[in-house]
Every structure is written in C-alpha cells, then in structure tokens.
Length: 130
Image (cartoon, rainbow, N blue to C red; front, side, top):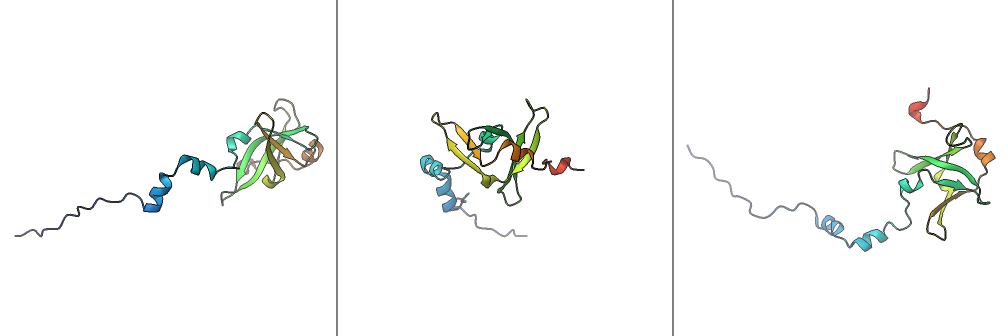
C-alpha cells in the first residue's frame, strides 16, 4: 500500500490583504485626522442642552441609533429636579449644534425652549412601551 505524497506549501500565509495591512499600520496622526469633527457618545451623555439664550433646556439621557448605524434621535430629559419628575423627549440629531467654549468644553445647543420641549410627547424606549 502506498501513501500519496503531497507537496507542502512553504510560502507564508498572508493574514490580511495589503490594503488592510496599510490601514492597520497607518500613521496614528493620519488616522486621527479622519475622525476630526466626530463626537463621542460618552461625551454627549448627561450633557446639558442649551438654547440660543444660553439657558439650560434639558440634559441628554440617551442616544438612539437606527438599524443603519446612524443616530436617529437624542433623548433629552426636561423638567423635574435632580431627575425627579423629568420627562424624556426625542429630538432629531440634526437639530443639535455642537461647539467648544473658551475652555474647550463641548457645548450642545438646540433652537428650542423648555416649554417647546415639555409640550413634546413623552418618549419611551420600545422595550418599555405597553
């Protein structure tokens, strides 16, 4: 009985395509530049939302992302005191404006008033709806 012999492949296996290798080893400064202008979700959570008069109209409590990966809405808590009696409302992400103050802190503004937010229907997470 003879056992067939197979040639052994001595060429090293590539773990990633050349374009992927370039991306993984890209200069960190270049990679960082491609994200300029983006905001971290963690930076938005609990951030105050101000109006044009620099009044605090609410706080960001949640960020909702749709199935395509885009931000569908920002959930803003309005009214109440120290979280008691607060009502959540949904604002479209594109209604928010982002800037940095003189100290470099993120400032979130929207063209709304406390009253206009309080008049919106209360937002409830799909899992909390009955």
